[in-house]
Length: 327
Ligand code: WQD
Image (cartoon, rainbow, N blue to C red; front, side, top):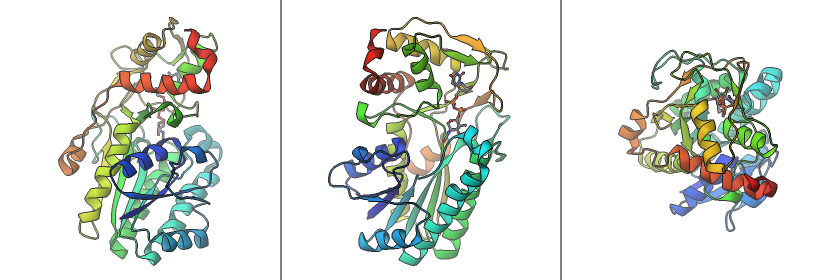
């Protein structure tokens, strides 16, 4: 098969491209390079620069490269920004997906994998979040991901595509320094930034109903996540048309912000205890996946632990912030 990977020049997308090509799949990257980096696309993989809102370019790309499956990662992904710019998020994430699906059905593509998010669950009041846990997103970002899942499923059923929505939990780490996340929007890079600036990392609230009072999340290594895409792609390639999978991608293990901050200090060689600040609005106390369904359906489970995530992310950070190595 030939897989079109939208957002394939982004942090997660580039890892998916690498995992897919290493597994022997043909890949074509489609990316508008708004946050993606062309250098992340490996040699030999074609890069088409364009928007998922460009119906004509999409149709041409699908045809010219004889694409048979799509992994769609291209999207806006900042929760806070989505609260301020809901129209932009619905336009890019939902309308962009609709335009893409329209081209996909016309081109006779067989399989479609959507990058979704644990943000579809909102504030789940359960110990482990299963795919049956009610979806009550708390932000326009989460809403666009949930609407996207519905659109993908309905299109698959109507047009005989096999589809999957992968709900990522908290992604961290890198396969190699040059593929590391360059954004500073999540806990790990935000702690790195504070340490590098000679400041104490911040813990947003220590009065949550959790064992140490700080928020608990399920961190997943980006290489494990990428391998889950390969397993999903392979499954869809042989699944009957009309198959639809909704799968959590996590490790099923909760790690608190305080545990993460302590581990980061240890790995980086800094010694700066974090400062507790105000809660960040909208943060759920605990979001941890049940990773049972993907293990049963695909035989996939995560192999890499939190220390490997932090160590590999730090190697990437040092590449872009050489001054940080004095810790
Ligand atoms: C993790 C925890 C913070 C920085 C978001 C999206 C989700 C997904 C991943 C998707 C929280 C705390 C953070 C800091 C802190 N995005 N924190 N100090 O909010 O779980 O998930 O990103 O595509 O949909 O909601 O991730 O990394 O921002 O925060 O205490 O300096 O770390 O409050 O409890 P989050 P995060």
